[in-house]
Image (cartoon, rainbow, N blue to C red):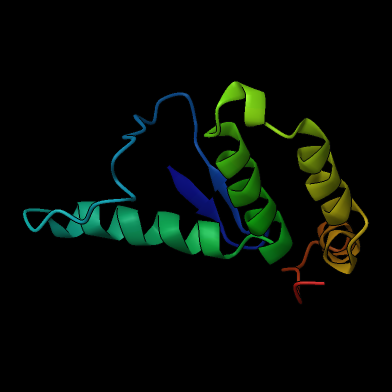
Length: 106
């Protein structure tokens, strides 16, 4: 597993085992390598656009609701807000210019 720092993306290749529990729980018995992996992954997540991360959390909350309560229209609105944001434009611009984006949460 690696963090592509300039793009702020988490890259997982086919040979990387992904453990589903490495983020929610810090195990006291973790060695320095496991702890570094957790911190690198958290840094990669934190480097993402704040609106995108907020949208992901909102959609996960919707998905956890009972099927009858799921609001698909709201999820589409959340995504549309991201695509209409200044951060989205900044992310595209930064990608084309091969630089780290400067997200502002707008």
